Amino acid sequence: MFERYTEKARRVIFFARYEASQFGSPYIETEHLLLGLLREDKALTNRFLRSNASVESIRKQVEAHTTVREKVSTSVDLPLSNECKRVLAYAAEEAERLGHKHIGTEHLLLGLMREEKSFAAEILKERGLQLATVREELASVPNELAARGPSESRPVNQFSRDLTQEAMDGKIESVVGREVELDGVIEILCSRGKRNPLLIGESGVGKTAIVEGLALRIADGKAPAMLSEKRILAFDSQVFAGLSHNRQRAEEKLKSAMGSKENSSEFIVFIDDLRALVATGKSAQTEAARVLKSALVLGEIQCIGASSPSDYATLTQAIPWLDEYFRNIHVSPLNEENTLSVLQANKHRLEKFHGVTYSDDALKCAVQSSSSYLPDRSLPGKAIELLDAAGARLKLRQDASPAEIADVLKRIRFITNKAEAAIQNHEFEKARFYSDEERKERNNLMALREKYKPNESDAGLVSREAVEDLVSRWAKYPFQS
Image 1 (cartoon, rainbow, N blue to C red):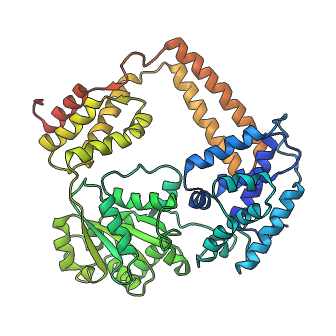
Image 2: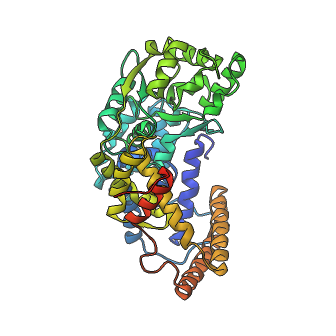
Image 3: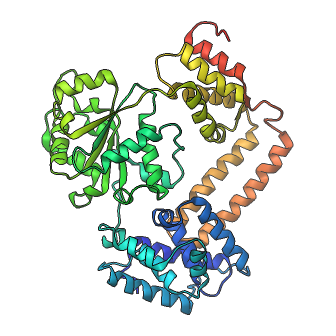
């Protein structure tokens, strides 16, 4: 019965079945379908729910509403409740209404909202979702996801990173102090002509962070409608390697990184170093540059470029058409006050990664010493690099864990990888087994840590003195506070 469903929509059904089994439900109910939708299509749910907090609160609301029974084996083929059957029928009608050949996740969302007396519809209504509004917004987007075929594959390969997906997955840090530049990028992208931004600034000022900020806005549903369905692909510099003379090879690599021509308008290409478009050792554009120009002329793609001021002068000589298709945005280094705000906003990610904490004095020292002693890179880049290195240095010193703890950590990593693979393959019985095994190992880890009590006292604190010592090593002369 799911032949017309896209791959994402099918996975929603699989996840709904898994959720129902975990609650011990004899049927797949609308709330299980909603949880499956939240789990599978973060782009859609972030677009209408606007925040990850809403997603978490929905799960807690379902858990509070549900009488949890003994878990049902995931090998049992749970039937759909009558409400769920009507939801799927409504989803098919919505696909027809929108003129879509395939039934996608957005049609399932509309189907849930149409089953007005269901628990899932109540949850969505409480959060401000209105059927007419959601339907109108979906109808206004010409390239909706479900209008594609069931494959729904993304061009994620060795040449590019999907920044929009990384933002949805929580892998991108919040951007502080660059609202003006970010708004400028958005204005250029939404222009009719010359709609490709070129960020010009010294190394470390945060050019890439501005583009990541755009990805965050798209993921959070805060971008203009014109950009709300775009994917930002950051090209690896190797995509241009060896393409000085071979135009056919250049076209193949660029198309491989961007996907098919039919889907290319969905992407915004980010090239973080436009020097890659210039032949090595020559002031001449490569065949990759000519292919890129052709795509820009035909309006097949939009591009965000980045360059340092000194490189830009060389680029405009080698590639004179840059000024014709790109509009410049100059990115100045942040001042010390804004840099400190950046560090305070994002220090938790470094703390989580290294397993340490940073004192306020360490943050202030990183900002001040970067300006005074390490002029080779600009703020905030150098200050972030300092904190990262200081955290790594301290972590290495305190990580002389007993062999028993190291072995348990290794087993936990192995088990979690197996569990994720099982869920991806819809092998939910295996996933449940690995989940139980992981819980046992984590209990074992807690017992061992209590036994050895590693990392006690303030040994995990990165202090001002630790940053000063690192600055002395990097600057190669004694630090004077």
